[in-house]
Length: 309
Image (cartoon, rainbow, N blue to C red):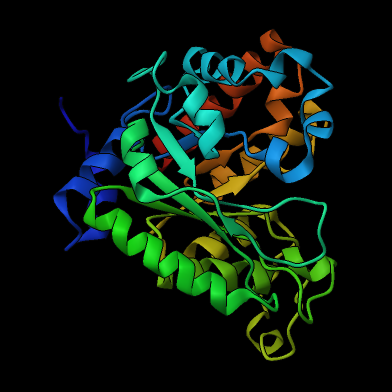
């Protein structure tokens, strides 16, 4: 298989990494509609565990079945499907090789107040399922952040030794952070930096607002950051000057114009892709497919424009 220049360029960010890990990254970057562009489009379906089945799937009842999401991911041509162990186990055999898989190896739920996640799967599970990557969530700022960092460091080391790419969901929350501060620009950028320091190859963050939460960061933010694309560029720079793949979440369901405006700004700011769950699978299948195609098109157009400058 020919590896185009944009993908070879991204793989060059990971100099010194094991060849198996680079092969796993290439598998993600060379699959689906965004293949070869250096951008990613991921369908995550951990919401049933995190937010509950009714809140996640009742708006579109076929989505209760994990096989629905495998088929949606395959037909839409996403880069990967990300989900917890039990979910992937339902379809990994039936759909083996049809779409790259990311095992979400720690999870939490909305029934408790502690800002922490339990380790719910292992590297061996990921290998047996045929995954290309394993993923973990961290909560920078929470009272349990340091235990989470240690768990992720250990899991990431084992995953890399086994040839798997590592994805980290960096979601600052808890501790002294205000609710609005969880998506403040300085806090999101800090979370991306921590994820990169923990060894992530791919970092997932939320789109940052223009708020600056921490007093020590305020003097550094003198430029106009009212545009989302400029804030995205800053977060990308916080991940080793853009030398780590940074993808942005879609968050709670919103209207299509809002989704496309946000994705367009993320793409224009050099974000390396989107990881969009509820905004797609809570819609009827045909609408979800059209939406994922449009999101992919926005990222492809931005990547192509960047290559011609």
